Amino acid sequence: MNNNAFLPKMTTTINEVLHFLEQWAPMAWQENYDNAGLIVGNRMATVTGAMIALDATEAVIDEAIAKNCNLVIAHHPIVFKGLKSLTGKNYVERTVLKAIKNEVAIYAIHTNLDNIHTGVNAKICQLIGLKNCQILEPKNQILLQLTAYCPTPQVLDLSKAMAQMFGTTEPIFSEAKTTTNLGESVPITKIETVVPQYQQNTITRFFEPTQPGYGIAYSLVPLQNAHPLVGSGMIGQLPTALNPQQFLSHLKQTLKASCVRYTAPTHQLIETVAVCGGAGHFLLPQAIAQKAQVFVSADFKYHEFFDADNRIMIADIGHYESEQFTGNLILEQLTQKFANFACFLTSVQTNPIHYY
Image (cartoon, one colour):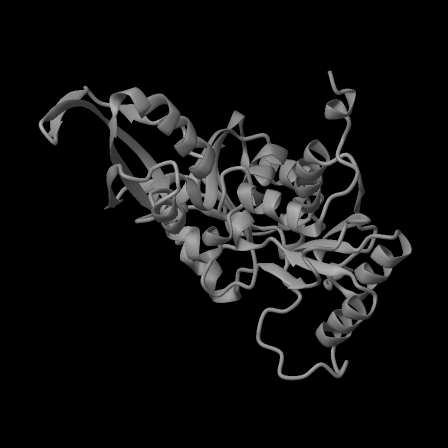
């Protein structure tokens, strides 16, 4: 037996780390206005260490350099709009220039991490202590039904190849039937599975010549169903109902919020809680429709608080405060997967807002 098979791989490329992160939070799940992904850096470079932060600021790059980290993983993209020059005239350009000069890659995992059921909002729910959590507003029209007609003797091999390539759950088999091919009866089994729409090109390649699915008839049909594991916000239940004052105290303590801006309570007890990390006003109608007693989010403007309309209590804890534990979430994923480079949470306080 080769004992080396049990040893961790000696080096890991940035590309391998990004591939892992994008299996967890696929790039296809980011919103169309976003700029998640590799912003600066060489994918093929070997990782010397990873620095994790909510924001990739110049100070975070300095810290990464000091700790010999050539990869910074941030939630917020440092480049959100197009850059027309790189002269160092503002904090964005200075950060990018410093990263390039010191060969530090910057990667953003933003709304794609917001939109998965194990992402930013799940972390908020976990900290608050919510149970039976579900996506508040699932995305629809992002699923495909794949149907393939496979010779029965090949069905197990094909289904394993499909599961490996597409990352699907086990396919569903229907009853086998018999078809005629060149005068010979051939047993055929229909395989059905559901795959995300972004894998359509992978599916097409799977059925090309020289690939496992070559020669097998297949079809792809868009589904109208919402994806229960992908979408915006989350909603869940407290294990024990709290009165509004108890809940606000609990919220400040568990999410380490300096203050909470809130509207008048509309219920004597709070049990169902909706959450959205970052700016969440767009989800307020969904929180109301699903009978949440409180909506925990951030970045509400003055007039947007009126939209509570005595139907729900809004609890605005601040943008940074709602997402500050995202770094812990990313760190948990990376340390479970990789053991051959160091991962650090930044010690830099990147919140631009101070409270007096």
